[in-house]
Image 1 (cartoon, helix red, strand yellow):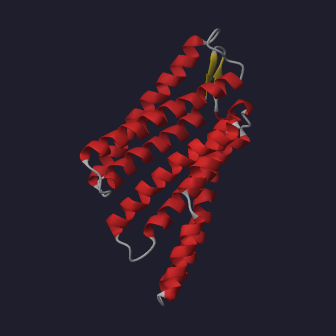
Image 2: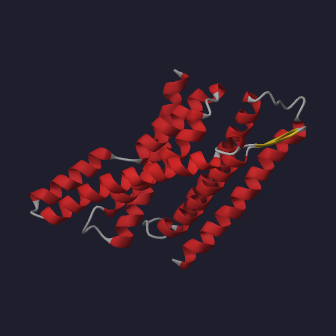
Image 3: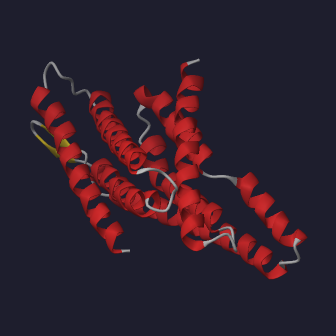
Length: 235
């Protein structure tokens, strides 16, 4: 039951984010081609490849529901094969054979390439000492923190570019941005703590390490989100 609830929660966030991203893309580039669906599928494929190594291959047993919420719920709801199929069918029905063929080729090739790049990046991060820098008093899970920072940058970039394109009032844009950033900082920091707990660290004996890792992750992600916001304003 816990796993079902986790998937449901992750799916709700993924569906909302897919709506925002695809709507923003369509308002930005128009509906002459299924740009919105193509972008969310490519982004979802990259995220799946990048997170597979950190969420599955690292085999942190305490976070089974956590993994299900992200990989099955969030990314499953964020990406969409059915919409891709429907939009391709509409293109064929309208006689746009070239666009239909381009959509099929671009979706399949770009998504496979994106998931390969994600896997490659993740494996490179975990190649050296399994993604951690260890010393006598603790560890720095630099691979997980780097992945967190990368997603933080994407959140800042997407929040700036796409929320300006979606027909929402300024108040709703601010609320959505704050919610996305707050939820992401909390969940990314929580996963780092779960990783440390799985590796026999605890608040009782390693308080400074646990709190320092959580705070450092938050500060790094906030800085990177700010960089994404700045870049988004220039696009």
